[in-house]
Length: 215
Image (cartoon, rainbow, N blue to C red; front, side, top):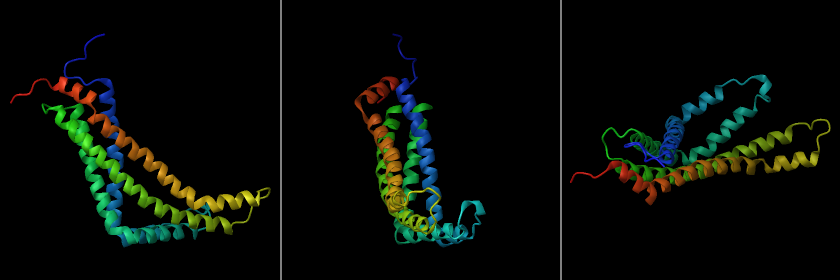
């Protein structure tokens, strides 16, 4: 078995760093976008209410009701959520920079970036979990509006009314469940990556790559 190329990270660490790059960029962009929207809360709500949706998308009153419900649910948590999204975007930026420096250190010791990456990824996991809990509250409210809209629609020929009622009743829970699933995937991945970069095996591999440091 050949020795690893000097200065080249093991494949597993490189892959994990690239996953960090992609996920932190995507998560950070979403968080920054929402923080900006919340900072201009009333203007953003009016813009969305003025949006015209194609007729084929259904009842023209449905989407304005969804928008009003969404912003009504967000309003009580607007200020703390703005701060949360801002801090989350900053934490994602730390993950992105640290992961990039792991791949291209440009003379910097990788072990310092490893420590920063591990801590920042765990921080993102915690913040994204809080974000997901807040999003679940909003989506549950939106799901209630969707359920009410479904209840006003006539049944299609051959459609089972009992099954339709079951789906309608479950809509708020299903909407909140989507948030829980997304949170588990994103926050769980960041938590695993954070623990991975904090592990002894990765630390030893990075220390070997850095070589002896000057005092």
